[in-house]
Length: 510
Ligand SMILES: *[C@@H]1O[C@H](CO)[C@@H](O)[C@H](O)[C@H]1NC(C)=O
Ligand SMILES: *[C@@H]1O[C@H](CO)[C@@H](O)[C@H](O)[C@H]1NC(C)=O
Ligand SMILES: *[C@@H]1O[C@H](CO)[C@@H](O)[C@H](O)[C@H]1NC(C)=O
Ligand SMILES: *[C@@H]1O[C@H](CO)[C@@H](O)[C@H](O)[C@H]1NC(C)=O
Ligand SMILES: *[C@@H]1O[C@H](CO)[C@@H](O)[C@H](O)[C@H]1NC(C)=O
Ligand SMILES: *[C@@H]1O[C@H](CO)[C@@H](O)[C@H](O)[C@H]1NC(C)=O
Figure 1 (cartoon, rainbow, N blue to C red):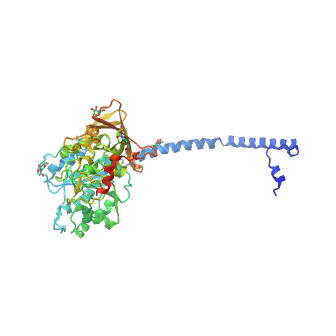
Figure 2: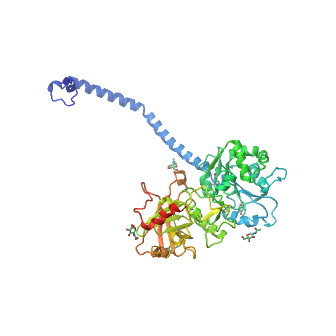
Figure 3: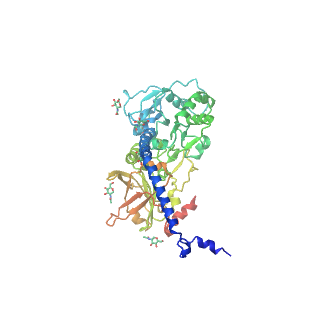
């Protein structure tokens, strides 16, 4: 049994008159409350200065934040904090300088191209070239790799010679080859994520498994670019010469550097935007499905066995074309977006500033996202690679229709329009009815906003896109709009498309 009397005592508004307190009790309580109020107000008046103090300290916090903001801007890594060291040679420089010129910004980028001897041509040295230095003599170093070239010693020492120049405010040493194209805005975005006061060794591995097996899986490949923070460089230069002699049997300069870094105990920080490009054939499939990361570098673009980026253009002109898009929106360059046109049951894959693929059927995101193997390994085998690939079907009816970057246009409100065109001969004619309307599309226009670099400090997520079926749209022109994905948005085909058997087929063909 519960004690009912106890419960009654706690009824808030008792009806029972016996429980209502007497008048005198009310009076005492009232006086007590008034007294408390008086004491409190006296306390408040005497403490006005305390409030003022509090208010002024709040303003101080704001000022401090503003100062912090400014100093944060100053602290942020920018292009001037990078010292480039480009491995060149006086014989190849004349040709290779065409690639360095594409990204080198006189009076903005700092660094040197390191040559084996004084240049025979180019007198005076053009302002559009990185300034040159002649490397120190390395003939006393040991080099015993019978199939290699001892210039590897000289190239490996670029880091040391660059460091010893002693330039101020250098946070990162970035080494590359004379046929490396750096996308410097994105390089800065990537390096700015890391604390330059710590020892970092950043880059990418080879695309071809066979090359990583020969060299290493934990090495930044020199052609893709090697970024070394100042404190690591400081340690490395102390041991580099001895280390180069100790690893005399290793073929390449990047292997030697990796070995010395290993002695310090620092491991490779892989960044997917560094591209060694150890592949033969067309780079189209690889770069149409770039990972969600800023495009930092492309290498080997002048190698005969690697086809031009854009099939209808020369090697150099096609790089210039991509750079045209990059100049408008560095962060978005080669970023992948996938969407469906549900009015026509089409799947679309966009690599912004590079290419578009139209599949006239619905295909799962898994296959849409995977690079199509339009290339072979560096040594010319079918694979394997250090990333997933899907087959590059030869039958015309199993291939997407491809479009490559044609025009880059500025729109209002920080928007861009990039248009991608078919190239005569590359899209083989498929007789299937489903292909007819797709083959009639000769141009894909893509509009989007400029992607702020700050997205790269967030968790990586592909952007989404929509096919805009303009009512009076021209049938030969497709309009795609790229935008950030919504919460809960997915790339899921709404139904199983019978024609999508091809996508299904592709899963089993390998
Ligand atoms: C500091 O910067 C952030 C964003 O960069 C801004 O939102 C904030 O208002 C700034 N604070 C001050 C006090 O300037
Ligand atoms: C880079 O940052 C430094 C501060 O470390 C600043 O003095 C310089 O003006 C900045 N340069 C550019 C190009 O933003
Ligand atoms: C320079 O490049 C051109 C065109 O790509 C080529 O024909 C020529 O042989 C190259 N010269 C050298 C010295 O490599
Ligand atoms: C680079 O700076 C030098 C010295 O200030 C100047 O003479 C030269 O014109 C500049 N070059 C470019 C391409 O801006
Ligand atoms: C798209 O596919 C669905 C399901 O297979 C089909 O019902 C529809 O007719 C197709 N639409 C077009 C335009 O082919
Ligand atoms: C597509 O873009 C090009 C510019 O590259 C423009 O000339 C053309 O009119 C655009 N087409 C449509 C349908 O907007």
